Amino acid sequence: MAKMKGIRRRWMTNSIGVVLFVVLVAIAAFSAVMGSYYYATMSNGLQTKAEYVVAFFSDYRTQSEYYQHVVTYVNNNTEGKDEAEMQFLGPNGTIRFSTFGLAAYSSPGTPDIAGALDADTPQTTSWTGKDPSTGEHIMAVTVPVLMDGRAVGAVRYVTSLRLVDRQLGIIIALSAAVGLAILLLVYVSNLYFVKSIVEPVAGITEITKRIAAGSYGIQIEKQHDDEIGDLTDAINDMSSRIDQAEKLKSEFISSVSHELRTPLTAINGWAETIMNGEVRDAGDVKKGMGIIVSEARRLTNMVEELLEFSRIEDGRFTLSIEPVDLKAEFEDAVYTYKEFFRKDGIDLTYQDSEEEFPTVEADPERLRQVFCNLMDNAAKHGGSGGRIDAAIRQEEGWAVITIRDYGPGIPADELPHVKSKFYKGSSKARGSGIGLAVCDEIVTRHEGELLIGNAEDGGCVVTIRLPVGASTGNGT
Image 1 (cartoon, rainbow, N blue to C red):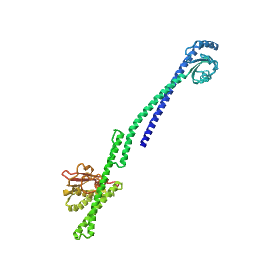
Image 2: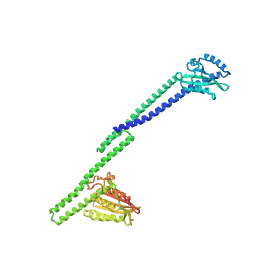
Image 3: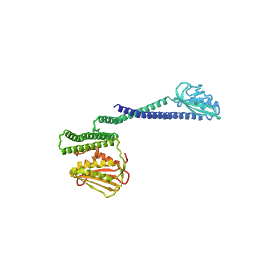
Image 4: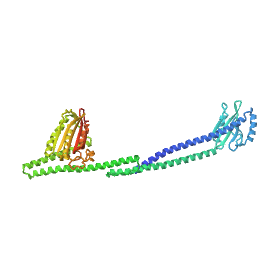
């Protein structure tokens, strides 16, 4: 669960961190826009008023006329007096008259005054900052009064930004509250989302630990039809396959143990009997020695089969490729087993092909191993029919070899599995269950195919298809 908590923590930290960054940027941008809007609106309003006053005095041509009428204008103009202070400045930046009266004959020295009374380029200037005398946050707009192209004074409007700043503070606070609400919403939704992922994954982790501990076959309950559901299906399938593989392995070990014990028992029994002199008749001794040789050969074949399978499993299985007369190799196997089968009461017939078979690039030892194994299987599982047919022919660039018995055949539901390793199905015949798997691997390495099915009129038929007329086998 520590790992799950780590995933939850990383997920929440990353997602909330990104959202927090976006919210902070959004609040900062919104606050900047709103502040710029409010300040620009106030600045434009003050500038309009100041320019109106300057236009009112534009008809006066001397400073004396200008100042004489300024006094009258200040005393009579009381509109908006509480919202903004109107100041009339001299050419040196000193306040000559003010609607508040308290600031008269002072010199604020702010940048807006310097810009409006500039000797070369007097112009309307706006400034926002702290009042030098009171420290209050203010906005000032100064418009020059021009006579003959030079500034003889200026009209300056000054207003406090306390209410505006308070309004902006409220807006920022509301924006922060909305951002906090968004963060909480994202946190809760992410918490629920992560919980919907972490808890199923934690459950899957516990089940996989139990599978690793040996509880093969256990299944996880599928709750969602999504990626977690796909993971659940994959683990359930893995668990089932492991369970099946373990059962097959156990059955294989049990079967091999039994198969090895049977010939060893026969060998030991007859060897001890002959060694102790319990058998005096020469015929019985010969019979006993024949059994020992036969069982030793069967034991050797089983060990070789197991070794071949081991080589296939760990990747050490190789082919020694050389030109091979495929027809001759198969005929050798047929004639070798013909006598063996005759002793067991089985008639082995061979249908020859009159066609000339070109040599193929193949491993003769491996092919003989396939032929012998399939002959043994035919006798072991279908020998009760008393007959086995073998044939070879060519079909459009393929050599087709068939081995058919007349036994009970293979149940239809077992046919898809007969080439699987360790699989023995319902057959009671002796064997390790890996012979066909080895044969299929060898044929596949020769770029051919091994087909197993039931004949229409009874019995099992095995077909080997190998390419002729071209190089086959990959040598690995």
